[in-house]
Amino acid sequence: MMAGIAIMWLILVGMLMINAWQSRDVMYAEREARLTSAVNMVKSLVQSYQGRVERGELTESAARQQAFAEIRELRFDGGDNYVYVINGHLQIMAHPKRPYGQDVSGVTDPAGRLLFQNLVNEGRMHGQGFTEYRSNFARGSESQPRVKAFVSRYEPWDIYLASGVFMGDVNATVLDNLMKSGLVVLLAGALLTAMFWWGMQRVLRRLGGEPDYATEVVRQIAEGDLTVPVALRERDQDSLLANIKSMRDALAASVRVIQATSQSVDQGAGEIASGNQELSSRTEQQAAALEETSSSMEQMTASVRQSADSTDQARQLAQQARDTSREGQQAIDDAVRSMESITQGSTRIADIVSLIDSIAFQTNLLALNASVEAARAGEEGRGFAVVAGEVRQLANRSATAAHDIKTLIDISGQQVGEGAQRVQTASERMNDVDRRIQRMNDLLGEIAAGAREQSSGIEQINQAVSQMDQSTQHNAALVEQTAAAAGELEGRAQELREVTRRFRVEPQH
Image 1 (cartoon, rainbow, N blue to C red):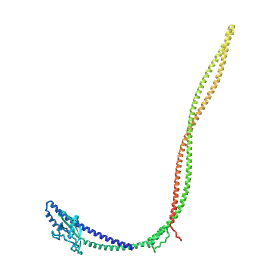
Image 2 (image 1 turned 90 degrees about the horizontal axis):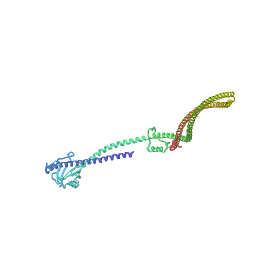
Image 3 (image 1 turned 180 degrees about the horizontal axis):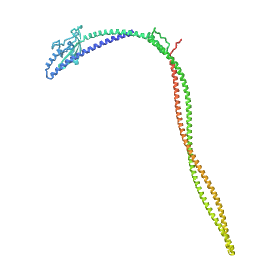
């Protein structure tokens, strides 16, 4: 506390001294600026007269007299300071207190320095500049006040414009300001000291004890000892140590909960990891089964597709059989028509044979009559009787042949009728076969359509199984990731448990 107060006072004093030094520098710079401004103003006046000379308004002699006369009357800083002029021969050209033309080459200051000679030398060497000397006249409390002069050379007239100001009063002014500022700093320092003392006392009350004791308590808590005792003042509930004690109790309760929770999380993570491992194994088995199912479904799809192709081929064969049956039906119809034509021809032949039989019968009658007539004729009709007998025999043979032909024709007609009836029956059966082939063709078409629908459905099922297989594999990957996450969670829980072990929440006996 005392060190802090001492540092505060050092800072205040240092600021006071720095401020005084800066004020002194500012006053010096300000006075130098006034000097420079006054000399430059007079130099501008001289230049204006030189301009009138150049314009022919004045002669150089008149211009010099008027300019020097005007300069003698000029004052600045309230009339105390002035600008004077000397030439290169160290003679006064304009000075409010020295006569015109006075030789000042031997004028010295109390220290023996050539006062005006130094001014001329500075002007010749640099054109303009500052010089310092001691005044021969007392000013205030100073018997030999310090003067700072500024000189500027005007080369066309070979003159030197100079002016000086007393600098001793700067230190007096700075000292006066320093005294006033010191009084203000003293009052401010006393007030700040009181406030600092009161603040430190309040901090100690807010701390609740010595800082070293509070530091030791915090260090032990930071090392994990949550059983460290905290000694408090009577009825102390708002100090830092009281809050540290509350923090210790709350942290101990939180660590207990964290330890219990980390143990539960560790057990739960182990169970989750075990369950995920088993689930991963089952998922892999399910994925393998789905893969086998997908392969079987592909084989089934190929079989159904092959069955559909075979059904299409069978349908094509049935269509060809139907076409062949129609051709056979057409041939049978042609055969029936041929049988009808044969039946009609046999009927016609039977009619012709009947006519032949009638002709043979009549021929036999005529031959018999001829024989009778030949017998009546006797010897004369014997040859005719022989011819009649031959004709009769021929007629009998013709009748016999016609009878045999008729019998054969009847048998053939009966057989042709039976053949026509059988052909008709075959035609009806062929029509029945055609209808059955058509029905079989329709059934094969329905079977082929059903096989295609089954093939499409099986393909959809195969796609669904493939999607299920992919989903199962994805689920297996997710399960593996979950198992890895559960393992990592278990490791994190163990790390958390290891971290919380460093906290001691129960007192050791």
